[in-house]
Image (tube, rainbow, N blue to C red):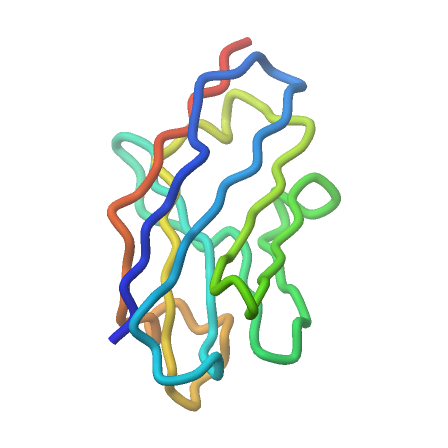
Length: 123
């Protein structure tokens, strides 16, 4: 089981930037998928970005060109660089991990979750 702790959430103006971090511990090795998810009040959780051990990133359409996911295996840390933020990006952001054979983009495969960090974007 992977223990995950997010940080970096804040309140920013539209057009601003934030970098979220997720510290991971407890994994036997680095061979697991990592993803960022978000949930806004009254809405379902949605996947934002995913990255596997091949460092090939995948993004949901609404954040392509604005968000960048990256992992530093030496530091056991996952990042989400968020630029050109919009009010609709406001949500609680969670990082998650899974070590199975299912695709990193398979949201239902994720088994380990952090407690989240709040991002609020004002217009």
